[in-house]
Length: 364
Image 1: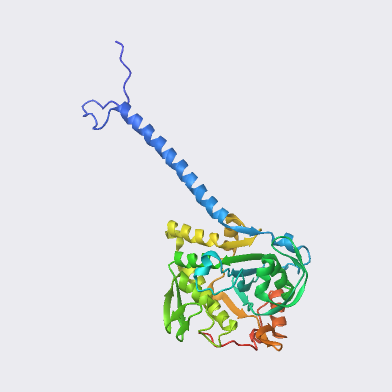
Image 2: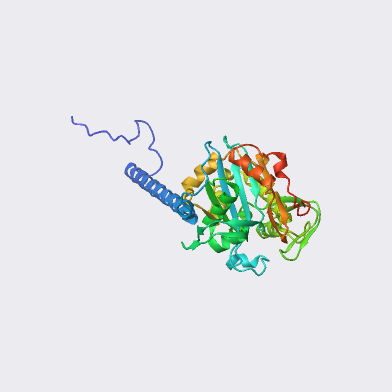
């Protein structure tokens, strides 16, 4: 007797047929599920690529090496790194809404030379007052035009006149310290970054009322949103003697608080928030061409993982009031020479090199 082939999906003798669709329909359903899973996987990959491309394209790059040329200080023989971080203060467009005053063009409102020694476990950040008189070297502006050297120009005018490469060139000439990288943060994007992380906590010892910046704080602890944070780092008339030197202490206080806030937030637990923060950060960021991609920027950030607010020292470049113009300052010697020497040698800054003859009022 010839037996028909046994159906592998048929129930065993004495067993009730399984509930659900017939065998052929189940196989079709499985194929549909597999196809749908493949589509979702492809869609997720496409979405991930789109998100990466968006963040990557946000970053603007400047070819600092090409603009400056070879007339630069030598690179450090160690693995230490030097960054020039600049906060650009354009009063046009979105930035004009933040009690910025009536100033045309963009200025280098905040400038930090950040030195990360070999081992990358700590950092020294040196603030250069915007009112410092400096000697600008011959350089190319943002349009490639050659600018002759100039003596006794305000430091923050270099950016507005000649652009970021000339700022790097000027800092290298005044310090003898080679800048490995350049980062610039736009003020309007800075506001979005603070809002994306949910604000930053700061404490002030006295009331601050500055109608120029719009900042109005009572003494004590405050959670600042993006707009208030801009007011905080811009304020000068409501603290100390009203000079730009007093504002530097505010900026240093805030930067430490901002770094601490970012450090303590576990953004990996919230991919949506992590993307929002990354979108805001990359959207307001301009770097040298060596960091102008999401991959390079991420790798650099990972290499600096050991640096934290507790291991970051904030110093103001030692300055004294200019004898020809009391509204301007000049680098104080020998203090400034000793400071730059320590950074070039990858050594801690001696205490005597941190003292500035021009104080600019007490820290709030």
